[in-house]
Length: 386
Image (cartoon, rainbow, N blue to C red):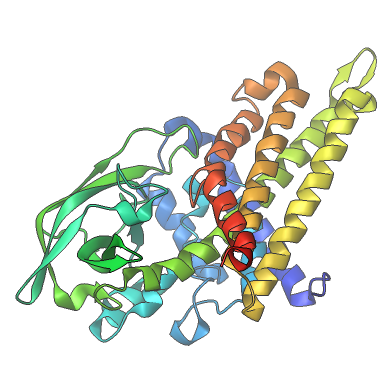
């Protein structure tokens, strides 16, 4: 891997960084305190992202997306994450699994998402099925030309803004190594479909204004034409997206950690105690040195993993390493930032307490740290335990 960014990548980073500073950061405090992004602000961000060419940068060029490689996508994610998800989510990255759309689905779902006319959400997690995704209980039973869905989902991000959901439901079971497994199918379910109810879920301290929702299906009838991919092959369309998503979460974590370091450096230079800047004291300066070193390591691991994705050589374990390491580096960096700021680090007058709150969820969503360690260790041991 060539660790030197190309001129185009440097320009891309500069453009996104400028966009964040001008179009997103000015609204961060307001959104965090209100725990809400107004429809007007959401539309404004979406419109400016489209005009700037950032919208749907993760989608292939042949369908109207940005057509960027994974390394460039990771660089963009790193910059966007320097502000809360509540704001940068409107620089939309449609679910990549929509590339499984066929026939009328392309014009009804895929293209409108890329053009900013529709928003999707990913509905997999259930109250009894978080890390154990195979334990989902939402069922879809075939009745003629329809499937009838019954069950529930929770922790579904951004469902309140979505025009449709990509819903995963069990459509059959099969035997595998003596154990019963679920055959899962993914469905495109429009927001106004009778039998589907969406309501706000519990409030989260991380990323205020970026809400999660609960979804309930009560004899919700969905045409068979809304099956995404093949019946019983839902994991086929989900797994590649989930694995790649972990690398982008890692990039998000690197960006947040860098912001924590940046504000800590400024505070260490400006804050005076005992007649001098607190950065002159080893108790503070060594924290900064450790933060910078760990962030650099997380960044290099993340970008290298994104590069391997572009080469088609990345493994699930490598994606897990990037997500695990970067999210835990962020947790340490955010905590050290609070310590450097002292009491002010817990006040909402500075961004530090917000960075600290937002950082905590990164070790949970898109696969907990424990799940990442499971994936990594299983991959390491597999050749030896056959």
